[in-house]
Length: 259
Image 1 (cartoon, rainbow, N blue to C red):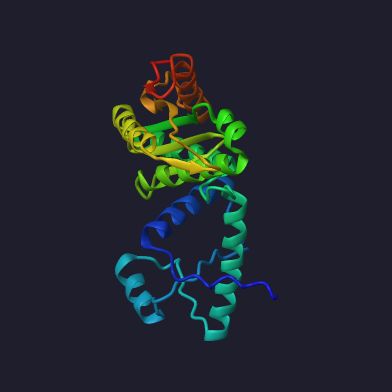
Image 2: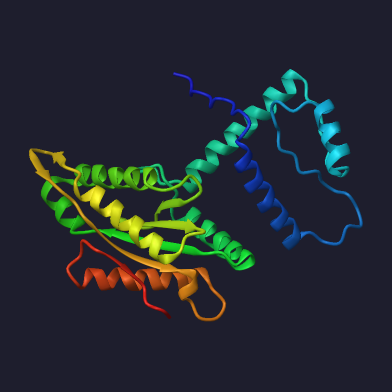
């Protein structure tokens, strides 16, 4: 059986394009040398914007340095196919195979970017780190396939409980994290408590048994950090709060103390 080719993507939503463009600008500012020659043009295929419409935008918005290069049908299809392949590979690289949410690699990258953004814009940023309670007992009692079902379900509950621009990631075996831009610590605390209440009501039926699960969580926010905020310190404070919960009965959410 031949391998199924990925479906060529449509244009991404405007919010994604703006986020990508912002990131490209940051990278160019960080790494570009002096402009003594023109070596490359950075291109992102966009559907639904013809050259005439772009010329009007250039005239009204002073975008003379940005070109709209028209593609014929075969060129556009080829570029979309290449882009789809690249996006598929990037998804596999940056996402956890079991839960489908970002993995530790992507979490680290996003956390670094969000801390930089919060510092530049003087906005709030919160981080939640959570860990399933007594997860080893579930694997030992019901089997690893059952443990995987618990992990997958927690990933789904987390993902559906946050905003589209928040980031939920699996950063360890049974450890997850939530990055919450523009969110103060008290809001992150209340959100995580609601998620815990939702998750603890889940009933798992597996290999002849039924059970419920809980998690422990620590919440940290950027305004708790002394000096220049750093991703490692934000993660450390959330971890510290998490382990305080683990040592105090589990099944709770606790906010980190000021560093």
